[in-house]
Length: 326
Image 1 (cartoon, rainbow, N blue to C red):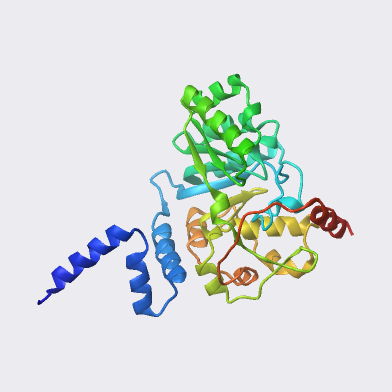
Image 2: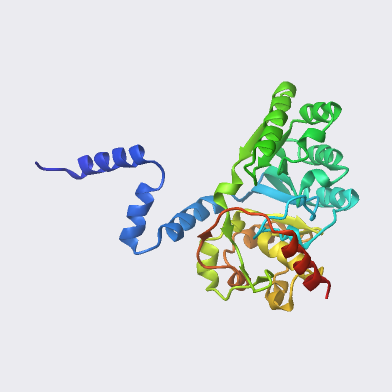
């Protein structure tokens, strides 16, 4: 039987549709001599960069922007990308309001993400979300939470969130029955108020994003920056901390944690990445966001190691706190 190029393409397309996302990319990666993850992330990153542009209002259009409301968390996840088990505290609402005012003149995000730690630990999270809506009227405003405190939200607050079209993203980190019931009850209330929400099964996608020493403290890798960047998911997380925009949330958080004394000086390499300030021109901001990997990417691993999500033990936390406070 003879096959034309067209028929081969059609048959290959049917195979890809039958077995789902990734089959075509795996074959292409194989032909190019690349790993599947490296090829896929390179392809996705190119698509990601194509979404950046300067708008007619002279603002930089970006897919999303992150603001941290809290650094403390009511979970102590091993290999937390924000280092929450090693940190504590919240960001003042006035500091966040100032950042909203400054950066709303510069950027137009499709989505504004309000994050933690655990976001709902902030006593003014609802007010902060409403103020964010005032600055970005057409953006999605999304509160990220692990869901544990959802049952404590009053109906008046939910109605306020519904009125301002504030959304929730529940990042599931646990699998026990009582936790699942909290999520089920909360989403039922969301639906009754007409609040949009998404549940992410984050515990299924956990990975080691840094190495640890014998005491459980994070230690940096010594990777090829380009390779580390190619497999990194944090490059899709643009973050504003202390009025400075960082194209990588990982570097932004580790940089801040280092200045807080939560990390050893082994991480000093991240201090050389200064982000970009709101005083920069739109063209400079756009160029920074499109600039790809940096030398500081070397602190991250150059391969993805999937693991089961787990909580640090009380003994682990005591040991870590002793080391941090030394």
